[in-house]
Amino acid sequence: FTGLGAFAAVVMLVFKDSILGLVAGVQLSQNDMLRVGDWIIVPGTVANGIVADVSLTVVKVRNWDNTLAMLPPYTLVSSSFQNWRTMYESGRRQINRSCNISITSIHAPSLSLLEKLKSIKIFSNYITTKIQQQHDGIVENTRNSLGLVNGSIDTNLGLFRAYITIYLQNHPFVAQDAFLLVNELEPTAQGIPIRIYCYTTVTDWVSHESVQSEIFEHLALMAPRFELDLYQIIQDSTTHTSHI
Image 1: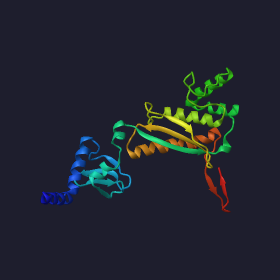
Image 2 (image 1 turned 90 degrees about the vertical axis):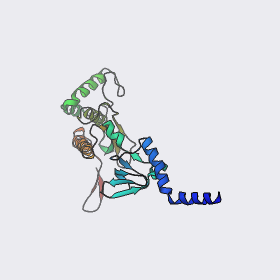
Image 3 (image 1 turned 135 degrees about the vertical axis):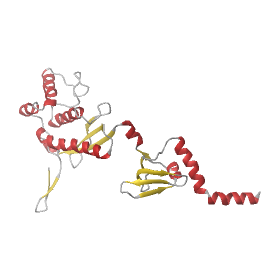
Image 4 (image 1 turned 30 degrees about the horizontal axis):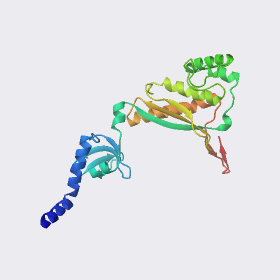
């Protein structure tokens, strides 16, 4: 029995990786946790890319920089990893970004500004209806009884927030059956962050980034029409810093 115990210990030591790999492979397969072609990220390692091969002893991940990361299968089972397969299968990819608005540019809108903003086709009905509600003494900036998006006509920032929501609701590549939110985050020394939280209907990296860039380029273009300034730091020739 002593000899058998010693022999078993040697076998366990020699074939440790194979045994652990076999058990991990069964778990990964049984729970459908990993497939060749999946995009995975393994925290604490350099693995961030597409699974190229899965065997008893190694999982090969081709990273986005075309390097190859080798991981023991039991590493994925004993720790945690992120698999992006369900994102592709859902056909929805998240946008969660913000832009900072200069606090000094926020003010109550004038009648002339409201008239100018009414010329924006998708925004005209919102302003007309909100003005009428204001005249009728109705204040419903949240859960508006007429179905208007969250926002107000009390400030140019409230108007801009409403416009962004309507713009996203009319964007051809923003999912309308998924969660969509435009809100203000806690003010910082860099202004008030306006966060966009929504999902695109394109999931490949290039198309998703293109849609995301298009949205924020549009916001940078439209902010001045609402008499708002996006926050940025400008370094002048005398090395003095000014904020806009």
